[in-house]
Amino acid sequence: MDIKNLKEISNKLKFEIIKTAFDKQKGSLGGTLSCLDILIALYFKPILNVSSDEANDINRDRFILSKGHACVALYLILKKLNYIDDETLLSYGDNGGLGAQLDYYIPGVDWNTGSLGHALGVIAGMALSARMNSQDYHSYTILGDAEMSEGSIWEALTFIGDNKLSNLTCIIDRNRLSVTEELEDVGLFRDFNRIMSSLGWEPIEIDGHNYDEIITSLQKSRISKKPTIILANTIKGKGISFMENNIKWHGAIPSKEEVEIARVELNQGE
Amino acid sequence: MSNNIDIRDAFFDEIYECAVNDKDIVIITNDMDIFSLKKFKKNFPERFINVGVAEQNMVNLAAGLASCGKKVLVYGILPFLIYRCFEQLKFNICSMNLPVIFVGVGTGLGFSFDGPTHHGIHDIGSLTTLPELDIYNFGDVGSAAQIGKTIFDNKNPSFIRLDKGDFPALDNFENINRGSFNIIKPIKEINILLTGYMTKQCYEIYNYFSNMGIELGIVDVYGLKPISEDLRKSVIYPSKKLIVIEENSITCGLGSILSNILAIKGLNIPLKILGLSNKQIFDYGDRDWLIAKEKLAMSDIIERIQEFII
Image 1 (cartoon, chains in turn green, blue):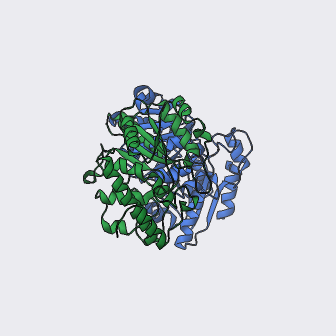
Image 2: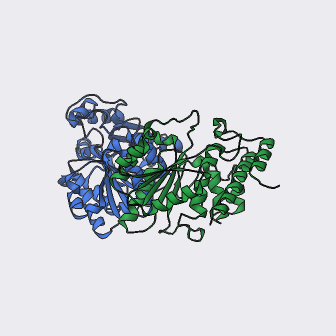
Image 3: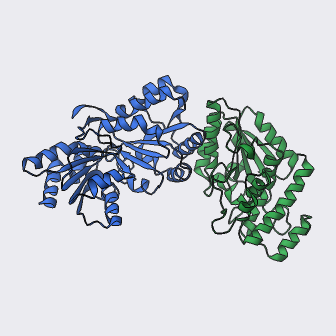
């Protein structure tokens, strides 16, 4: 799919995400919108070699959305790709329906989410299994930038680098806002390229809303001789003027009027 | 009771035989090495992964491998497979219901000179909170070998508490494989349930009371979770009195598991738990010296049983 179409999907899904939050009075909009373009590139370019016809194919690419609070974006994508039906999608937020975190029994979802810091080590296992079995699939994860502080992330970073798991790509949604504060260039981000290179990774820094850069980096990671870590600079609340970079929108729910403003800004008709 | 062999060899020799025939079997460790694994390492080096001292990553890695069809055995010192990586265990192994096998060595006070960081005396309390997890605790080489043969058939995760050093092969009175327990001496009105390290005391206890004209049933319980219907119906429910002897805290071990069963079932069966007091033990010394300090030397056990049954 070309970039023009990907951008159209992006605007459409942005509005559906906001509308869903309003309809269900639930959601985590800021961090959902910050990683949406990466998800769209993965699923609609597509980068991921997956199919709803064979959702459990042993040779499919693996993907874990570690920041599972962005699940609504994935639910909408899984619906568009026929992994789940309308009824399942609409059950989000209802008693007995889809929840605010991903569960592995949802078709197309490879892993449970809800606690941060786990996905990188898990996809390391998936990538190692592929290497042991001489399988060609690639393993991906999207992590939030705040979870890079987890000790388990650092354990996985060193293991993956030392074991040269080049069939693995880690994408960091660097939206620079955690639940409570701004995330400065500290820790890993103080000297990202140098630190990651020295750990044996191929670091790539991109604009996480620029489809050219997203796609090029993901394609490059697929043939890299080293594990790839993509630092995707993103904007929390991307695409809606009053939400962008506003920490309030980590968990705030829009009013009816705000939904209408978003509709206009995203060029979505009635 | 036959000749003693190292219980780790009894278990891992069977694991090795499984691995010869199944190339998906992988062993992961946090920088632990034992003699029992040398053959596996030598013959299947590509399937032996030392992640270094990084337990959180070890468990996550095991989960990822298992989700892709690998049959993963995670090996390390018992407390280090649980406490640092408990959420990994709960979240990535148990909530995903992956059949990963954890083998924690150094049960009870096995690492007697290393203090509470190395003791495995409260871990059953933590592990029983994980609904999907089976727990095994061997007291003899027979059960260790038996489970080693079949553990890869499990469809859900397992935690094996594996002792170290020489252990006997206990006689099985019935010669029936019940899968999680062995009846060593026939069930009576008063029955003693032992597990793990303390199990080998069973003959001395039995003989003492038998010589006094008191016949006690003796059961080795090596499957702690779930407690099978078979054990409930053939041993627990028919008993007039129950005694548990174990090298675990009295608050979290076989005794507490049984007390929970009795309470839920509403059974008024007096239960005596001879276990360790509920504390972190900062005394250093031989294992049996520590156990004796906890009033679990043979003379104390006899006295405490007498008080309870007579």
